[in-house]
Structure formats: structure tokens, C-alpha cells
Length: 170
Image (cartoon, rainbow, N blue to C red; front, side):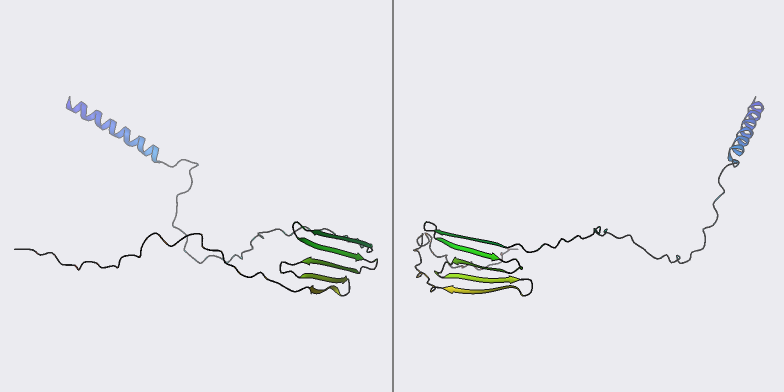
């Protein structure tokens, strides 16, 4: 009976060996085995051409319509006693593109500022500034303090006690 058991074990071992060899054989469509890696070399130069990070604005044809200057004239003024606002402006434009005007405003120091100006396409804007009146300033009167002296006294002087190392008895 031991002979029979040994013979059966040998048969099972042979069968398992055949199955493992059959499974280990390469399949017909399997990829080729890996070979040694290629030798190292410096990378080949490839110039860098980045894409622009922005896109230019679209270009549209510019159609400028040249119009002849149109004459006009205006004037306004404000004089309010309640708010003490006093200012005005007048302007006159000719048909040749020349504009003349004047504006005036009362300043806080009591003077009146007057600006007379001329503007044209040749000389640009030219202004002449003048002042009427004398600047006056109110006398300085400081308000009394709204609070009294502090309710606490001065701090006590700093006087720490001297340090004495602890005494140990043996």
C-alpha cells in the first residue's frame, strides 16, 4: 500500500510539473521580453517656441469724421447767501475752433479767483489766473480742553527686592 501511495504521488507530481511548464511557455501574441536599457546620452536640442500668453486686440478700420467747429455760447452763475456759494462760468466758441471763456469762484480766504482762458487748435489751452480782494484768516482761538487732569497719580518708582539665593542646610 505504501508502494501504491508513492506511485500515485509521483504521478501527481509529474502532472503538476507538466501543467506548470505548459503555463510558463510564452503565448504566441505576447510582447517581446525586455532587453537592456539604451545607453545614456545628452538629450537632443529642441528649441522652445512658447505660445503667446495674450492675443493682440483686433484691428478695426478707423473712420474719423472731421466736423467743422460749431459756434456756441453759454453762461451761468450762482450766488447763494445761505451757503455763501458764489461762482460763475461763461464760454464763447467761434466757428473757427477758437474758444474763449472765464470762470470765477470765491475762495475760503475771502479772495475771488478769476480764470480767463483761450483755447484753439494752434496754441492749445492758455489760461490767465488773477485774484481780487485780500486774503484774510480768522484769529486762532483754541477750544478749552474737554477733560480735566488724569484721575490717577504718577506711577510708583520701580524698586525690586534684591535676590537672595536659597540657603540649604546639610
